[in-house]
Image 1: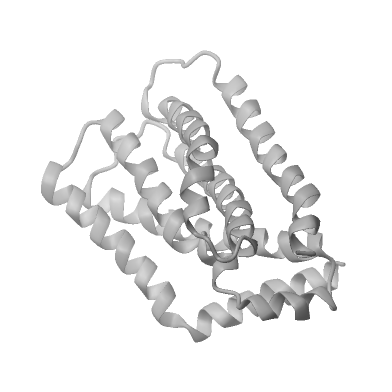
Image 2 (image 1 turned 90 degrees about the vertical axis):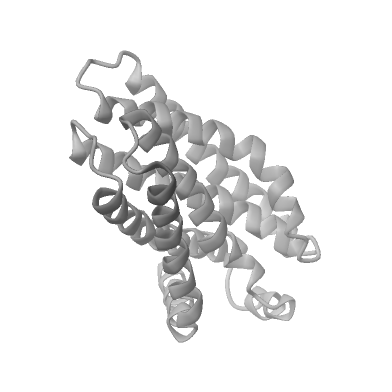
Length: 217
């Protein structure tokens, strides 16, 4: 299983590398979004900076991660069905999507620090939270992409199903980030961290439980 997992992740990386225009397009989207924010608001206050950053991460996840299953041709699923287990295929997609989202998060942080300033009291903690948040968003949108791809490529399902799943994740990440922004002690932050990890685990468990049924359709 581990060998199949690594082969599938490598396959996705090679496909992304061969289609460089997609990767460059996402990078250009991130840069243009941050530049547009800078032109409209200059260097915002810390809380506004935090909110804008997570909204940017949301749109980056939609553009970069949500296509993980939608870009696969429907006939390929029949071929993959003969090679690997559905859970292995799903986990490979989640690992690749998380890796891509981690890279895009670091690029976003770099652009934000250059154009919009760095109003963080604990920069290392914020980077850690942003990396954890990237994994959370990638897990949610990979799961939604799997559902949309198996539902006759209906990407509208992602918008319908994604809102109730992504909204609490964004709220938790935004509140967690306040600890890195404010020098004042923020009580209850560890409870939010546990809730976020529980949501991530729930999404992964749902994906592992439901994707085999979607796979067979």
